Amino acid sequence: MNSNTNILQLDGRGNMSFSDMIRIVLRLSIPAIMAQITSIAMQYIDTAMVGSLGAEASASIGLVSTTTWLIGGLCISAATGFSVQVAQLIGANRRDEARNVFRQSIIIALIFGVIISSIAISISGKLPVWLGGNPEIQSSASRYFLIYACALPATQLRQLTGSMLQCSGDMKTPSALNILLCVLDVIFNSFLIFPSRELSFCGLSFTMPGAGMGVSGAALGTALAEICTTILMLYAACVRSDKLSLRSGGKWKIQKHCMKTAAKIALPAGLEHTVMCGAYVAATLIIAPLGTVSVAANTLAVTAESFCYMPGYGIGSASTTLVGQSIGAKRNDLARRFARTAVLLGVIMMSCTAVIMFFAAPVIFSILTPSPEVRVLGVQVLRIEVFAEPLYAASIVCAGALRGAGDTFVPSILNLISMWGVRISASILLVPYFGLHGVWIAMCGELCVRGILFLIRLFREKWLKKRIIV
Image 1 (cartoon, rainbow, N blue to C red):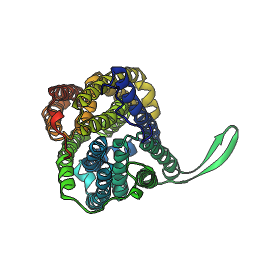
Image 2 (spheres, helix red, strand yellow; image 1 turned 120 degrees about the vertical axis):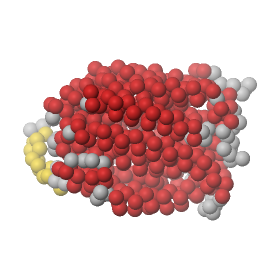
Image 3 (cartoon, helix red, strand yellow; image 1 turned 90 degrees about the vertical axis):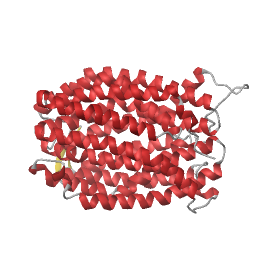
Image 4 (cartoon, one colour; image 1 turned 60 degrees about the vertical axis):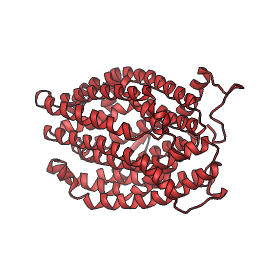
């Protein structure tokens, strides 16, 4: 979708038909969903590359993955604090103010990225020990996390500029660049993970150069892909975008109201990601004593499950933009209808992907790992979780709609209740009896509870009063 397109296309009476709403939600969602599909496909390839090195390599990355999710969530939260303001300002046709917010966000993103990178680097040596990893994987897990930490400033800027482009109505550009990110990740990994080797293609043999860095190569490949994509994303937002371009003028001065509003949105969102990822860390501590096979199976099952929820996150991104711009235009009626339409589409699409995943799980695990034990266990636990996908979809898309309204505090509380009150508590109770299966049974139940809580929040409609711009 071109950034010049007017999203809120109304008829002469200022209304919009249901079919038009479906079309607009899909038009905004499809680029993001396609990016998710490519991302997951590349993630499968990436995971298969590491998995081919053995269960210990997969477990090394899996051990610190919850911490990388936590940090990534904080980066997204920092970006959200500013991008939601931009969505509502553009909806109100106040583009000069939107560009001012974008300029201020770049300054804050750079500062925050450097700070969080420094903290992550300082704990990289001890993190695998704190997480209870087996001694044989602690060293490789530490090196992986250290390299990841060094690239965090680029990650923060990529998250910010991508979110800004989406909230301005341009879904195609960030989606295309996120696809490129995944492609570059696989290309760099193919050279960095494996040593030089002989390959054959169409009867021709050739030597494929390689650094043979193993798990560290996977981290370095991702870091290089992040840096390249960040440069392109900055160019798209700062130069090419007609709504955000820094060439159109604006002020770099930090404004109190902008910072206060950003904090009001970002801090609860950051708390939400901390709560969620803190629970994932707790789950890792619960799973780690079960052994390397369980840790690897859990990591790969989480990777495989991402196929199911990619439509939800694409539609959730669209709902953030549509709700944000509708509220900025003082059209709460449109915000309500866009939110409900997006949730309906998300539930339908994720239910379909769940059915596919249930039957395709053995094939997917045969790609992700050569270990028979990891394959069998991974398929079993993944099939437990697919039954929660419809309500999981509801929670994802509802969260996107609420975020567009600037409503982030209550969702963070709902996630706190759901993750710690249901998932972690149930996991602790079930693991002694069912092992890794118990963790995934608890996950399935918790996702259903979360979906119900978010639907209640959405339909009570208190979020419609959350217009954040003045």
